[in-house]
Image (tube, rainbow, N blue to C red; front, side, top):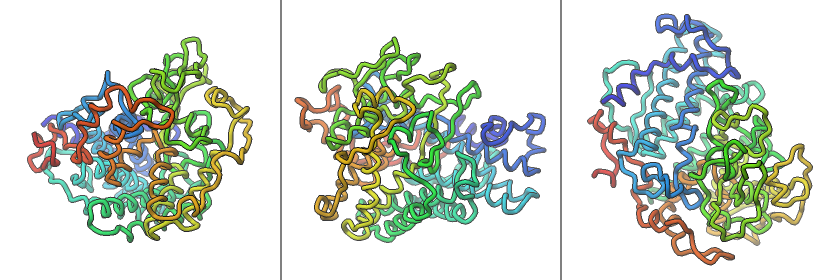
Length: 541
């Protein structure tokens, strides 16, 4: 009972004291009492900042989502996070399952506190609606994660700050999706546009992007489960993604790595991200300690628990060197600060997800436990992928708009830095000296992918190549109904140029994974505290 009591009696105003200074100066603690809160415009602003800060928690975008094993991401055998890495976890899992559940519902309660109280504050009405829209966007984002992880979940629409009425049942998936959509439609009407909002705040295009992803997901799952063709949802996904593209407010970074490094944060490719801030403000993160280059942390390296599968490195086209090497890296940071890049293809050295690397160290006050990098929830690159996938579904095959969108990503990948070698890429030299190479990833056409099935397969691979390491793959495999198939596939598959299939006891993971793993279990402690909850199939014992 203790977990759920702690969850629901958590008062939103306690979070407001840790507001990120990029958004708002800290509110004096003498003003942060329950009887004084939610009285002024400043309190309304602080309430929403507190709701944003919730996104930094481990169970949201701190680090736990990075542990979900797929065909491209895996955990080291020495630390499977209570079985998450080998699909042997149960409802007792506290490392990931409980943390996801608990931290999302904490964040939702903080968003609900803003949604509940801000309308009663005397302040500028337009600003009031914008702040409520931001809080509703944050609630929608967190419920979108929850409904994909757990299926039916209780949808709470008001702040909970007492021990009354805590035994709430799970709302059906369809109900949750409808409420998510309502929150985002409100956001499209009342959020600021890019340029009006400071970096890290939700915008109209952020709401449209999330709504496009919601419709794409719901359409995919409708089709997966044989409940229809999903075309209506796919069309809405295409519409909203198309609006973000036609709005023209975003652009791809010229160089793929620049979408991820701290030196280039707040770039024009970011539609919505979680802002972190180093410098001893308790706002930094560990992200690059998982998604970075292997090696000593003090030299800019990272831990070895979250790694790339060896297979992941093989799904790129031969000329796609920049994305391949930046994302799935076979290099090591040495203790003297140099890089070792000459490992043979089949060497035992782990393949790392290098996307959020800290190497090279560019700050004199570098602290690997308090880093300054942001987490990209939505990049403009994904909008092209959503648009292309949705149109392929609507038209039962690709049209010119599909190829135009996908070729934007191929075009960007043609920019190389310096001499264009993998060694130079891993040194990550600034300032950039970019060269455009027409020989890299030529445009694809109808001659290459002439029908629905071939284009669908291309998009499945392309989402991995472009978005791998950004906590998208597990959700993708689930909505396509491919989770079990793709994990089991690696047991025997030997890619070209290799002599063995996936190593390091991959067969254990493949033998364990089952269809019921397309949902996580409701945490046991929450089941015990709330008799109204019903466990997901497969986890009853």
